[in-house]
Image (cartoon, rainbow, N blue to C red; front, side, top):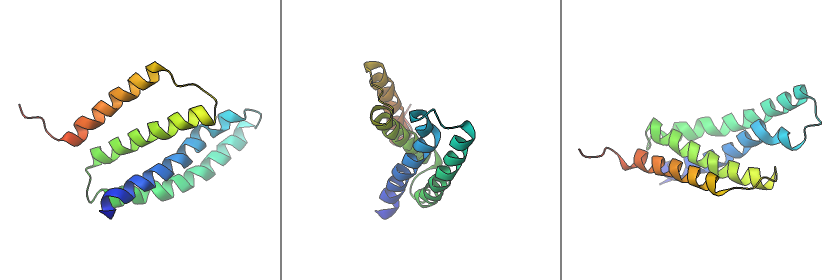
Length: 116
């Protein structure tokens, strides 16, 4: 069971680091770009320290396509919360429709082959 759940937990935490590395600087545009880049690199290091083990552990029970799909769905969940709570943006119905379509795609990745 650990091999199924641990990668998901690690990917959630790594995506928090990744989201702040990529988009956190948008909350304070007064910093020089070079500083934003250095801070992002520092955060990305911790993201990699979690994402690489998540994929190594997860690959024993998930396919590469399933791992990538998990990562993308987790990224959307983390990013949606980040956009609302950190950047003060509002989620719209269009966002929810788009996320739902991505979730539908994830369903088919995990469903396995469709019988013809």
